[in-house]
Image 1 (cartoon, rainbow, N blue to C red):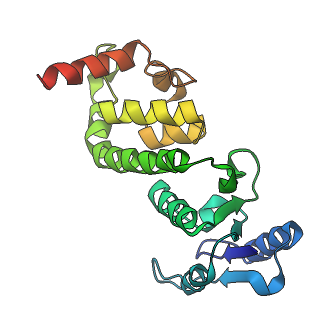
Image 2 (cartoon, rainbow, N blue to C red; image 1 turned 90 degrees about the vertical axis):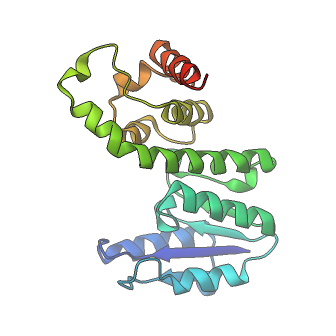
Length: 208
C-alpha cells in the first residue's frame, strides 16, 4: 500500500501543499491514503503523522515529496527509517538526485546502521560547532598547522562521502568549512588526506 504524507509548515507558501499532493497522486497514492499535516504552531505536534504511523504495516510504502517533509534532522530520519524497516515497511521520497530515496532497496540491517551512524556523528558535531567556530574566527586560522576539524567530524565526513548519503555542499555547511578545506582532510570518495591523517594521529597521541 502506498501511503502519502504531505506537510505544510509555518514558513511554506500555501501552494506548497498542493504541489506535494500533486506529486503523491502522480506516484499512485490514493486520495484516501494521503495524510495532510497543516501548520499547528506547536513544535513537534504532528497529529496526521502519528495517525499515519499507527496504520503502517508490513509491505506498506510511506511516500513523501522530499525528505524534509517528514524529518528535520538526520537523527529523526534515521529513527523513522529504522522503525519502518522493523515493521517491514519502507520510505520513498520523490525528489530529484539525492532527494530521491527508496529504502526498500536497502539490502539489510547494515544499510540501516549507516543512517544511525550518521545520526550519532551529526549529534557530536553539533556539540562541537561552538568551540570550533571560535577557532575559525581566530586571526591565526590561516596557519596551515591549525586543524579546524575534530576526529568525529573527520570520521563523519569520511562516512558521508564514501556512502554518498549527503551532498558535499550540505556536508560543508554542517561542518562549517569550505569545499577546499574539507578536501584537505578527506577526498571525494572518503579517503583520508594529509590534514585528516594529522587529526587522527593527534587524537591518538592524546589518548595515550
